[in-house]
Amino acid sequence: MTDAPAPQRTLVLVKPDGVRRGHVGEVLRRIEAKGYTLVAVELRHADEALLAEHYAEHAGKPFVDALISFMRSGPVLAAVVEGHRVIEGFRSLAGATDPTVAAPGTIRGDLARDWGTKLIENIVHGSDGEESAAREIALWFPSL
Ligand code: RTP
Ligand code: MG
Image (cartoon, rainbow, N blue to C red; front, top):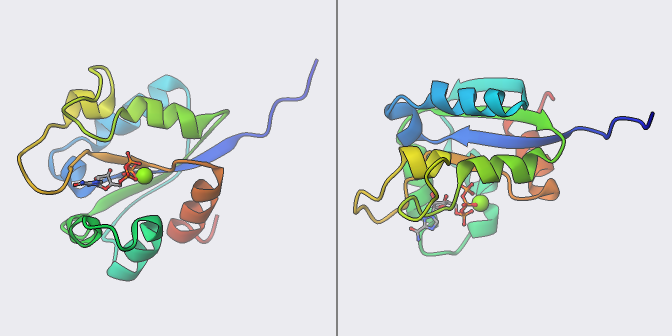
């Protein structure tokens, strides 16, 4: 028998629109139903410094200020989720960034829509690679 592969971890956020609209339970349910493991979960208000660091890759882009203020508009559910290939797997569960074209069956495809606001409100965030997952987990859960 071969050794089990080292589990991978990702950072998932239920953004303020998801919390406000009551989708925390549904997002966690889909993660668990898929077979991934919740390692840490915390509801919190993120401050500007944390969000500027979290979205460092978007610094200078036209939407970043609006994104940070949207992310401060209410509490966020932060979670560390574990499982083989979970980074890719959660992004697959989340669906495309634009909720209008996100496939039905995905979190964004089923639960999000375009409200005509300037910023894309799309319920969840998921780390987009191993390096960003490690960086984001250290940022949101320094004790892990
Ligand atoms: P996320 O980081 O939230 O998992 O989403 P993503 O990888 O699919 O999208 P990304 O390009 O990293 O953008 C981060 C978030 O910024 C908002 N956004 N708004 N033109 C716009 O209005 C715009 N572009 C990006 C979205 O909330 C997106 O999820
Ligand atoms: Mg991203």
